Image (tube, rainbow, N blue to C red; front, side, top):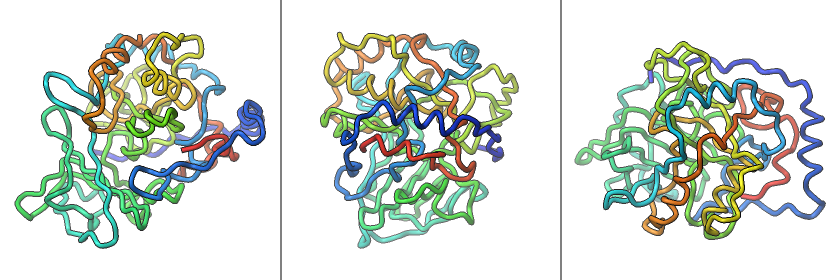
Length: 336
């Protein structure tokens, strides 16, 4: 992460018509309350947050085909579950107000919130072998999400490359406006909200956008709700996929022959899609670290062709480039 890029301005024409179309899909009384994160009473952002807004009826982005062609991978890959005798994914910790807050030595203070953070020797950290050593912590008393990148306890002298804090009760881009450039992923988006979680799959529904990665990304701009682009890649061809772009599985793709668990994930990709969020393996869908993930599920999802995904144009949803709420209460139709 080197330079912060301003969010590109987007037109809001047609927003009222679009939201009316989205809301019309759902009969009165079909909405339910947002479900909490496991082990907390906290929901992941308000219902009208862009992460919680269906995009299955949004128009296809005019650059979708070019962006898809810019990604070398031909199938969906999984950033979670078993592989090579190891389990992969992002672990997270549930903390509370009794958890000590510590100062973390952050090397990239220009793009970080200095904290403090509820980080300890017991905080699970994403395995550095194949991962970026992220540490994710949710305070169940305050519903504050803390994220660290390249985190190490370091024998009681904690350090990290980046750190950022999000208020899960708010639509603000970050918790503290004093640090507007804070980020721990390459699109400037929070990491935890986009993870595939086993508890949601078991419950039978994922009602929010997911996140995925690519080995390439355009360095000259970023799409809302992203706030950052990896300029260190020096890729100035705008036909290459953009950070912050949102993709969905095509309606025409038949998921009926997939297992029940796979169908939950694929249905979410159709309705809520996934944000291009980080540099990594091509078409890599990210999820939580959980020993319950099965090899068969990983193998199933890896058969989904990348050609069945399309980028959408969600510019009409942007009410404010500095916030994540939508132009209308589209989030009223979803549950989380």
